[in-house]
Length: 100
Image 1 (tube, one colour):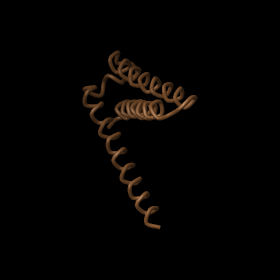
Image 2 (cartoon, rainbow, N blue to C red):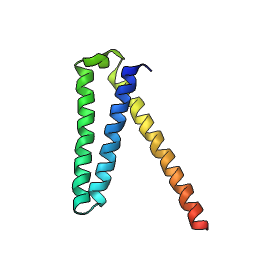
Image 3 (cartoon, helix red, strand yellow):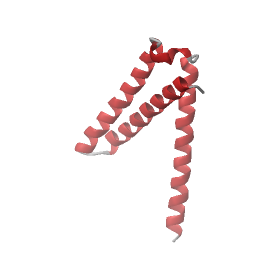
Image 4 (cartoon, one colour):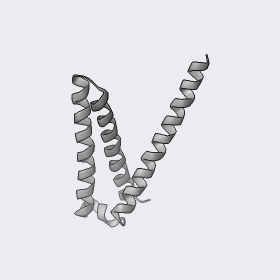
């Protein structure tokens, strides 16, 4: 993985993370929390759009790393692995807490 693919994956995972956190906060939050969730979701969409535009316009070397779809698949795998790991850690934490 070269630096441009790393930066693309970084921006996409940041965008997906902000989008997911924003949607969660906007759905479950109240008042200011809901507005913050909407802002996070919009920021996530903007990060994804900027990454796509940079890759499409081949700016700063972003378009030289291969197929954009392959990079998106890599980013989704990273986010998926993070979510699975976080859920497992949360389950183990809750099981340990509930047993004591």
